[in-house]
Amino acid sequence: MLITDYQYFGPICFIELIYKQKQLCFDKEAAFTKMSFKNRMVILSAQGPLNLTIPIQGGRDQKTSIKDILIAYDAPWQAQHFKAIKTCYKRAPYFEYYEADIEKLYTTKKEYLVDFLEDCHQFIQKSIKGKWELIEWKENSNQEVNSMHKTMLPWQPNNYDQFAIQHPYMQVFESSKGFISNLSILDWLFCEGGKEISKQLSESLK
Image (cartoon, rainbow, N blue to C red; front, top):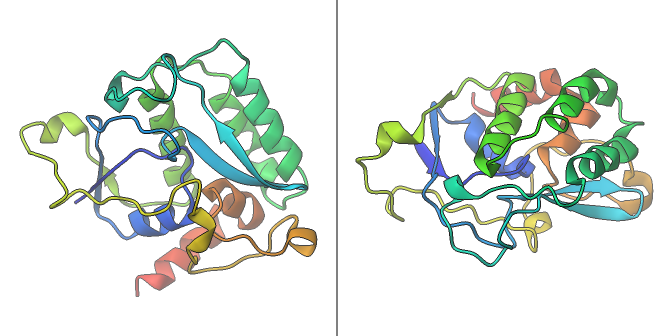
């Protein structure tokens, strides 16, 4: 079983990692850390990589367990994120196919960050036909999670593009920006579709 941290529509390397797993568990006791993908993702705009960050109550410097982190709604971040995604990917081949489901995610108000992240995760798992079983943290509450068996993710918002992905694909703005590696899984999903992603990742397991 892979035990790791939550990701906000995590980068492609994260999806390549979890696709290989039979069981996956998110560490709900992990301290929230700034400058991570716990509440941030990177998509590709006409101007280049674009960071989208979910605002949280109490600011980003707190060390509270992620299960207790509350989303801040002082600004209309949901509408802003969905608008940014639509603007960046409206010309992507498969965006229209997923648009309604994505819009639903961004019009459903969640109090806790982990609840929203779990909804995002379920959407991705369904879209790419992931077969891993998501194990609830409470089922492992009597296990001590430490560096011995928790997988620490090496990619962060300041270095994600330095990690090569297994299956390069044609990006929306590749002709002007060149290929950018390891963007949010949404970039790959909108450009190639979940069926093709599932096929390529499944072939990698053979």
